Image 1 (cartoon, rainbow, N blue to C red):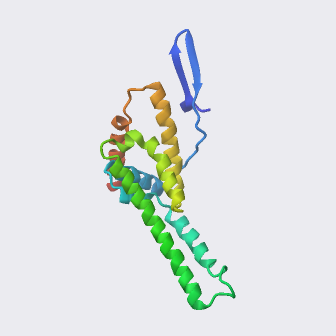
Image 2: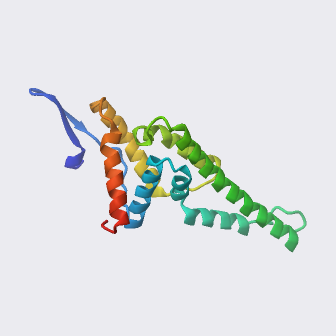
Image 3: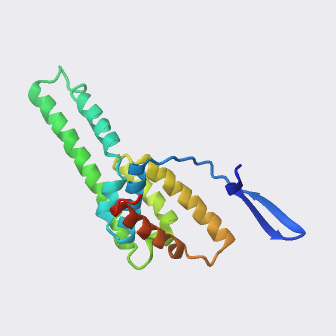
Length: 188
């Protein structure tokens, strides 16, 4: 482990060496960093529609749905005619659009449900809900978002164990706002 993964706890002479390593490695490019900041900003402002749209890996989503469309007609008896094939392809596209909208609606509901709380304070609680929605609606999420979200959930647990009275929002919210401003001003 590197020095950032080492925690010394206890008091002398009963010191305890703790190694922290959640096994996640992530390298974000500038566009992924900007997108992650936008997702967190959208959640802090309770804009679930925007957060949902930003979390979706649209390139992977398009490839997945194109593969389904390309495979259309393989199940039609006696071979498809052009009208049947077009109808099946249209049905696949419409279902894909409904799935994306249902996912975004679900993210919006999470924000509405969180109204009396603070998303950043409870982010770990919502990761499961977000992943369940993505699976249920066949939506592919941005890999950088998933990796960062899992790391946050793990660190949230470590922070709670080490410092139970710490409020994550007191630390995280100013950082999210600062990052948003920096990206908007082109200072990233």
